[in-house]
Amino acid sequence: MDLRIDAEDLNSCVQCGLCLPHCPTYRVTGDEALSPRGRIRLMREVQDHGAPITSEIRHAFDTCVQCRGCEPACPSGVPYGRLIESTRETLTGAGELSARPQRLAFSVLAYPRLLRLGSTLLAVAVRLRLAPKRLGLPRDLPLRRARHVASGDDVYLFTGCVMDAWQRDVHHAGQRVMEAAGFGVTPTADLAPCCGALHTHAGLGPDARSRAEATIAALSVDGDRRPIVVDSAGCGAAMKEYGHLLGTAEAESFAQRVVDIQEWLADHLHRLPAVSPLDVCVAVQDPCHLRHVQGVHAATRTVLAPFVHRLIELDDDGLCCGAGGAYSVLHPGIAGDVRARKVDAIDQVSPDLVASANPGCSMHLAGAGVETVHPMELIDRALHGEG
Image 1 (tube, rainbow, N blue to C red):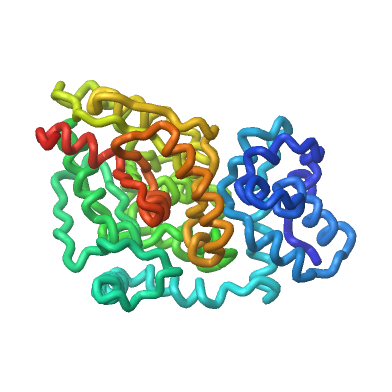
Image 2: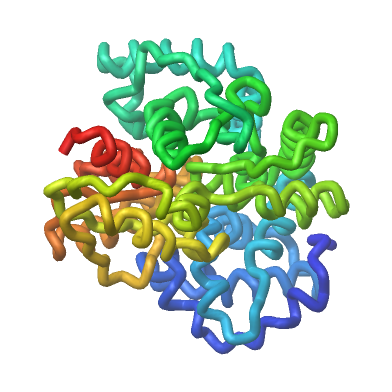
């Protein structure tokens, strides 16, 4: 089967194995087939040698968290993210990997009113203890959400889909922080309801491209070039890779406008007022798509340092927490084992709070009793004297 993988990209892997310690699924299983090196070997067998798609091969590709922790560790610069995304899309299109549940669930993401209604019903179900525990739904899903209100047109704040329905308070905190720095903010709200990141991870390539094209069109009217600030690491990573996803100059140009909110604030930190730091010890948990894909995780330390009493690092070299978008729902066993390693690293430093700049990570960790908060919420609290 042709996996539609670029041969040069595939052959750039020299099978050195330096990726193995950075792969969460290999770390918890010890299975070579569940490592980047092993999965690439299977890709070669399928694409170059016509190997049949067995249940073992399907399992290997289906259980990749797509954290891309292997990429920074690779001395050959293997673009593993592109390889696994192409492989999963091809196999999903051929019916070898099932994405029907994801396709059905994700279909609502382009319809924000329907998503909010569904989220409210889920919130009621959680409160009545009717929601299945395996879904890992947060116990504090909101029943109501404060409205988005634009304060100016200096920057867009991309609010997205699930995060806007479940964690809108984070968007409001980020907006207040940017306004404190003197910028007028336009929340994208229903204008651009979904970036397509979850679709890409699920192998739903056509749907992901449709969402990307709609997002670009909505935020580029009449040559609009203002920055698009994103407070979800997964969304920001996906949008920064629109050029690769769509293969057009327009998409590449759009991607250049996308900036993570910590990355953006680090360049404007001098514009915030000096305030007393919060009396808390905060451990920083780097979302994979902020650390491994965007490579801007250092900005989180830069912007948090003036506003909290103490920042501490986790001694796990940024290993994935196991959230992986919908991964923790689809593969709860492996996701739970991966999370256990992250929780152990957190317990070793005993912080008051854990700062995480991605909704999936924060919800997944909260499911294990870890108190998480978005960096913008901490800064917002400090600026407003809520310490």
